[in-house]
Length: 120
Ligand SMILES: [Zn+2]
Image 1: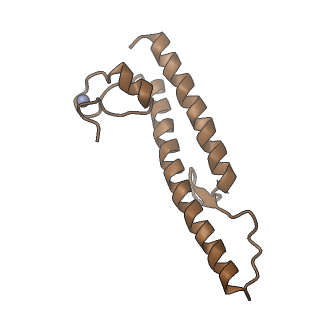
Image 2: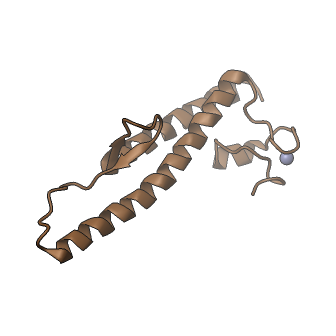
C-alpha cells in the first residue's frame, strides 16, 4: 500500500472516530473511572420514584442506550486500533496470514484486521 492510500484511510478513520465519539456523546459521557470507557445517561435522570411505570421506562431507555453505547464503543476501539496500526506501519496487513488486506475490503471497512478470506 502506498503513502497516498494510507493517508486516505487515515482520513476515513479519523472521520469515523469523530462521528462515533459524537454519537456516544449523545447518549452518554466519557467514564471518569474507566479510561476509554463510557457511562450512559438518560436525558433527565430525575425520575419520580413513586411512579413505577416511569421508572421502568427510564431503566429501559438506560438499558437500550447501554447496548448502543457498547456497540459504538467497540467500533470506536477498532477504529483507534487501526489508527495505531497506521502509526506503527502495520496497517492493512491481515492478522491471520500476514498478507496485505484487499483495498476494496479496506474501502468497505477501513478498520478491518483481516483479509477477505480470513474475515470473521
Ligand atoms: Zn488473511
